[in-house]
Amino acid sequence: MPISRRFMLGALASAPIAAALPEAESLKRRELRVVTADGAHIRVREVKPVAAIKREPLLLIHGARVPGIPSFDLDVPNGSLAADLALHLNRVVYIMDARGYGGSDRSPAMDRPPAENRPLSRAYEVVRDIDAVVHATTRLVGSAYADLIGWATGGAWAAYYASLWPERIAHLVTLNALYGSATPHSYLGPSSSTADPAHPDRLNPTIGAYALSTSASLLAGWDRSIPEADKSVWRDPAIANAYVAAALASDPESSRHDPPALRAPLGALEDSFYQAAGRRLYDASSVTAHVLVVRSERDFWSRPGDATDFVHDAVRAQSTKILPIPGATHFVHLDRPERGRDLLLSELVAFCSRV
Picture (cartoon, helix red, strand yellow):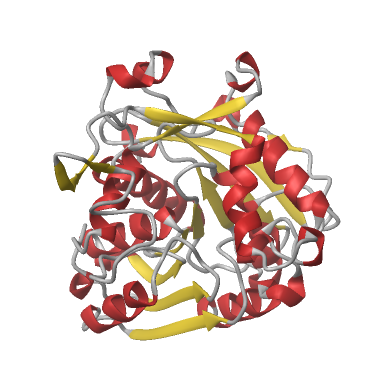
């Protein structure tokens, strides 16, 4: 049967890549590309156990600044949530880059000064990327469904998708994601520094297509969340170094800046501004999957109300559960195991094992 353009896999990009992680003998990795309905090419990494069982593919979706590989597949111990999930579940895991990020297509506007264009990669565009990846990966593994795990803005994107095509998603996890609580946000939304001074309930119109992130800015929020002067108590320095290095390497233009900096689309900021203001991007009542809403106690992005409001609205979900992780940060899946990562992993494995 011919494969439509939307589901095309990039054959030239699908050669196996080296895996230097300790689990290398048990896992195979390869790079894929899929094409969206509107013609964007999306980079996807497959992390596959050698003897994977036949279950729905598990798709990991990154957040607003750093793409998929730095977020979920670092080549250091405890740095790859993708590898840990693949091995514990014995299932195929996929990591995508939304448009404008990492190895996926970037708009020509990202080669222009940011002030010349509006914020790029809005949520309504990223759900097209998720759609293409869901169709391609379910076809690859022979499943009618996919499971989604989204971190931060990725959680909002994942839930948005699950509300639009509920029949395609079996399990949905949002990790430290906004939803649209009316609770004031600490630095987003009306009257914040990101608001329009003339219209405080709108995003500042001077915010452009993308922003630059240096190594220092990539770690700043994480550092503030750790209540210890010595950040290594909470976070392995090897993981922090690998995260920054992989994030900067994800943008081929990062070395042209001094200091090096990656470009990150600001469409996620625009969508998040309105969620922080109490507006919904989507209606959780359309979601029919099993739902796990994870929130770290020290998260600076989501609010407790985002979790409770989502579960309140998700009246058609197969099941719902809120998982608070005591003392954990926004980066819980990259923190030390005893600082919440072990609890997160065990809960994700148990949740995604449900039939």
